[in-house]
Image 1 (spheres, one colour):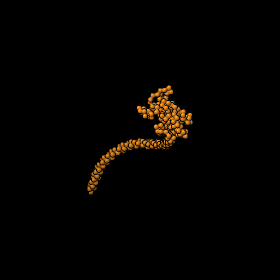
Image 2 (cartoon, one colour; image 1 turned 30 degrees about the vertical axis):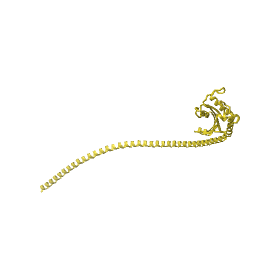
Image 3 (cartoon, helix red, strand yellow; image 1 turned 90 degrees about the horizontal axis):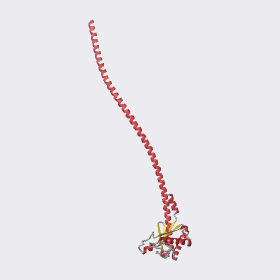
Image 4 (cartoon, one colour; image 1 turned 180 degrees about the horizontal axis):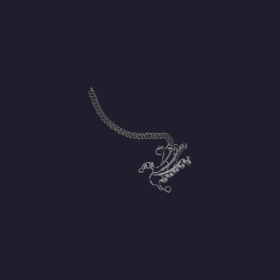
Amino acid sequence: MHNAFLSKRMTEATYQRDSMHLLNLAFNKDTTQRGIQYRELEGNYRALNAKYADLTEKHKALQSDYNEMNDKYTDLIRSSLNKTEQLNLALKEKGEQLLAREKRLAELEALIRKQDSITNALNNIIKKALLSFNSDEITVEMKNGKVYVSMTDKLLFRSGSADVEEKGKEAIKKLADVLNKNTDVGIMIEGHTDNVPIKTAQFADNWDLSVARSTNIVRLLDEIYKVDAKRLTAAGRGEYLPKASNETSEGRAKNRRTEIILTPKLDELYKLIEKR
């Protein structure tokens, strides 16, 4: 009975030993597996940590680029606003200048129309005053804002003379009557000749003759017909401003003339132009 008890205890001890051995094997196996898993996890952790560090650096770089671009964008917006303001100011200034020019242009056009109206009225008055003379003696025309009264030498002078003939004085008196009623008109008397040479005791050449003729008409207007001398200018052009060809007798006859050029005063027009 005692042997049976020992045998049982031995069997139990052997079973416990074998169980412990199996448990130990299982534990060792589990520990090895966990070690492998731990090392895998540790490797994964290190890889993730390295990737995190890399991503962190990239993020910092991107953040820096973003900040730089944002600063540039802000500067660009500010610069754009400044340029827009400058452009608006420039446009405003140009607009004001344009309006001012348009105003001056409108004033200038109004004065020119007024000038043309005055000149046209003067032209008609003079034509009416000189109706008694033939067209081959006197012509009246408007040109470049002026009135040109052209008198032929056969109306005013004998050949080679600067003394005004009676019929010429009559024409000049009728013209003087109009000029004395229209005092805002400048008067230039221009003497013209043909190209046939002249040399006398009194005149050295055609230029000398043309100046003497225009001067005598100026004296007649001033001293006899009382036209204000401040309005009068005498000029001699000689043969150098022909109206027609000097190759024919008809052309030379047209060139032997005295032109009385009437210019309405342009004080308002000149003042406006000076403002520009």
